[in-house]
Each structure stands twice: as structure tokens, then as C-alpha cells.
Image (cartoon, rainbow, N blue to C red; front, top):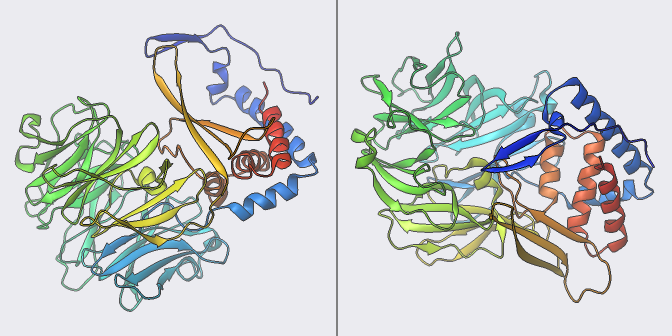
Length: 515
């Protein structure tokens, strides 16, 4: 047996939701030297066990084969007759931006990481993170990040020619996006004052762009501890709502671009999420929580946005936990989680005529979970995955209610049985979990993957396992023991037909986590 590091116990009682329970290892939650030393010792054991396995390299190669390709941060977006999206190229860490005519044809690369990084120190670790087309698709704003995936600069490319324009704005991006003016002359972005306060900055793109001096946002309206914000420009280009990023999505500030006046958008002391999109120059449609913990959708008159009594409900709170609400082609789109499985519904702009998008089986939508909002687009593209199918992208037709495939999944596992079950917690909460195994009658022990909800910022509950592995690997944050754990997890979930490999890896992973 490995010489596991000792794990001392403490007499600690915690209470959450009215339920008290012992937490003898609470000290391991702290960012202390003792907790870190314990973690590194456990990691060393896990690494040793995994690498000593005669199947380690074979299993690692198998997982790399099954990993996902392409970007899962953003679904494709249609603007001005062009589809815009990002993908992974063949070279290491190479990210590309592509466009394709909405009527078909071959995709065309308009930007890539290697070209953008040419001559830059550390450019080999750079990545094209965000792609935001202008309202008519004439231009695309690109956020080109360094190895931190947060520091970088905004660049602009002309869609028709692929010409890189002389725009290079150093920036810090944490999910925040640019807000294009309707006439495509430029866009607004989040910035910081020298003292660290929030700042609204305009980036001119064409010669017709009118000058707009930097506008500092007072700390009373947008506290400096808010990491960033996305400027959402009204359809008439007169006003901007500043919505906080990247975690809590709150429409915090209303800016009048003509008078440069600013005010709080929401009632004083608003404690909950409120994020959406402009319906028209006088109305903002948003998903809100608070009085409806699972979320509901309201239409907010901008003139009286600080008076919640003037808001009009469009979609009531229901059985699902709403993850985002937005507008697309004059329709309201809502995504929610029902028993941890994603569901997309569409409505007319007034909240009537509900229709559910016919997605395959129980699954998740990584792009919608990561973004938690519907970015501006003229057509609804949905990225969706299940336990037995990697990410596929579909386009939904609002009139027919049908889905068409935009890009196929890289992998599909046959002969997999998925079963949803429910457990009841001590306080009576109904907890869904899933059992994934080989199809057919059970004849003795066989590899089985049991997975339940893990509460994080992004809830990828029903995911093709290699997606999570790929995410960690791409961010260069996976140490050897983490790699071992990912190999074990992924093979258990994805190679259920190969019982010997899966059982062996499950046992290794189980031992490495023992306290």
C-alpha cells in the first residue's frame, strides 16, 4: 500500500440550508501551506500509481484519440448573411476564425492565431478567444489572448476580404464582449482607469466613426471589484446597458451616449441576476432571479427600469432552472436545466407561442453554459452533447420547428445505456443522477459511470467525458497527476465496451483519492 499522507480530523460542524453536518476535513478547504502540502503529497502518489500501470500510456493515447476538437466557448453566429465561428486548426494551439455564406459553400479562414502572434514573445501560447461580428457582418472583432487567456488585445478583420484592420487595443477580457454600434462604425469595450475603476471605451473602426471620449463609471454604479462588463448597445445606438461579467450577469448601468449621463439601471439594492438583450430602443428583455429563484423573463421599460412594478412578465418561473434568455430573429429564446438536462424553448416576443427545441436525448450545451447568455445573432445555433455523443452544432428553424446539422459530432458511442435516477438528500431535496453503462442485460460486474450534479459556474452535467479533459489540457493547467485522473475518468465513461481497461482505471482512480 502507498504511504498516504496523514489527514488529521477536526471537530467542525457546518450548517447549510438548515442542515448541520460534521466536516472533519474543513482545513483542506483552506489555502494554507498544510493543505497544499497534503494535496501535493496525494498528487505524487496518484502520479506514481498511474504511471506504474502497464496500461497507462495506452489509456492516455486512447483518451487523446477521443478528445473533442473545435471550440465549445461560442456557438456559430449569423450576421449579414455570414456565419461566424472559431475552430481549432491542425498546428498546436492554433485557433482559427471562419466565415461561411449562409446559403452554403466552403468555410473561409479570416484570421488565425499563428498570423496574429507573428513576432510576439510567447506567441506560441496565444489563443483566439472571442469572435464578435458587427451587426451586418461587415467586420469581426477578435480577442487575441496570451497564455493567461485573459490578457490580450482586440483586433478587427474585414469579413469580405479577410484584411486585418489597423486596430489593436490592449485589453483584459473575462467573458466580456464588445458592443457594436448599429452603423458598424465602431464598438464599445470595458476598460480601466489608471486608478482601477471601470471605464467605457469606444474603438473606432471606420473613418465615419464619431469620436467618443473615455467615460469613467463611478464606483457607486459599477464597483471596481466587478471583474468586467459587456456594453449592450440599443438598436438606435443612443444608449448602452453595462452588464457585469463573468459570473453574476447583472444589467447594472444605463449610459446615454448623447448626453454621457449614467444611472443605475435596476432598483436600489437589487441583489440578483438580471441579464438579457434589447427588444427595441425603449425595452430591455431579461432573465431575472430573486422573487423567482429558478428564473423568469420580464420586459423592462428602460425609462422606468428602476421601478420593478413597471416590469412585465413574459415567461413565468417553471420547473427548469433558467440559464439564459435572449432574443434572436424577433423570437425569445430561453435555455434552462430540467433535472440537470438542458432544454431550449422559443416564444414570440410577447411570451406567447411556446415551442420546445427537439434536441436528442438528455444532454448539455457547453456554449450556452459557458456564455450564460445569447449573443447577438440572426439565427439560432445550438451546441449540444450527450453521454454517448460529442458536441454537434444544430441550427433551429423557428417556422418549421426543425433542426438541421451545422457541424456533426466527432464521436458517437454505440451500445450505451443511459438511465436517470433520483436520490433524496437529508433535507428532502430531490437529486437527479445518471447511470451510464453498456447496453443489454447485465451479466456480472461491468464498468459503470455514475454522475450527479456538481455545482460550478458552468453546469456541464451531461457531458461527453473528453470535453472536460480537453478543456483542462488546452488551458495547460493539467499536471501529470491531473492527467492521470482525467485518463481514469474519461476511459471509465467513454470506453465502457472495453471492460478490462475501464475497470483497471476506475480502481487506480479510486485508490488515488483515498484519505
